[in-house]
Image (cartoon, rainbow, N blue to C red; front, side):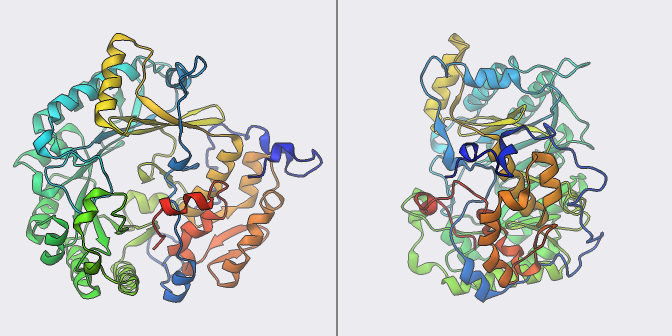
Length: 519
């Protein structure tokens, strides 16, 4: 990796180590990332499916929920200097920065065989109430370190998300207990202004769960559906009816949830283009506000649950490409806006509006409208992203449940013990490349003048090697480059990750087997 700090000071990019001109960049009225797409779908924003081009560029790469990615985590060293690292990070964070809270619930009542997690805990050997007490203890432990904005006695929360696992594994009363406790620790925006979401397994809802969630203040839900074909469902151990999904959506709308997402997966065992087409069309009839359509990556050597799936039952790479192409075309024809990296939304959904207005962001929670928030994670394996001045710290709790719980128990006796075991400290050069990558993935555009102003560099000179590497993509009409910037064209929208990967300094061969393919 090139260390630009060692370059001759006469180089035009030698100011890259200086602080950016703003700590938290604020979009100006003439936001260069605001779209000319308008309020409706236009041909300019529709992704173009080109099988030959996708095959040409289809290589493994990260999903860029952070930069650097999670593969760059380093253990927090057991040294005098490192003791209290997480404590100092939390104490020194900008009090005026709002928070996004993430809670990881690692429980499922049934194990789905496509699951890419080795730490899911099933009902037989779990106690959600016991885990909830550890979450509360961690909240108390971290909350005492957070300063509050002027004029308030509690940190401001604009976003909250419960993920897993299956968060609705928590009993209704436990969900109420968690929410009510959080109100004593943080100040939440009113539910019509904040973004409060939860992932749901529709099979595990009680009669009152949705009502309770809505009354608490949750305004967005995501349903894991994956496929509606019974043969596919049996093969992945996730069986439910289309009628069940439809009934959950109907109730959620009656309760005025602001946005409903449905997750689908292509590439599952026994799936065919025809069966997936039927699922997609049936889901379109249900009219969710957002859809996430994920590529199934079969990695049984890494994920134990996937060993239940036979290789011979999986669709061929050609069939998967057909499924992807059909799904993209069907959803865009139905009026959904392609956001990027597997995500679609109705044009009037907040996510689609944010993209058109140039205010879309991406972090460990995926695409988000709350880009000004620090992310504070709770629970086993959860991740936090905290900005201090020009540096961002990324922290991860222990991924082993027993080890995580042991840390929380130790903290009750010794308050210097913190749950994070891994971290990344980003440099100003990391922040620059993160800014480039995220704008390409969120807005299909990089404005050189904007980058120059925010980071005090000449972008064309600084990124001359990357620009040269993008030449092949320009020749293939995936992108268009000129003195103003880089635009991802419709033909390149499904390959936005490939464009972003060119700017990733950490993407080395040693990492390639850790990623799934782009398509």
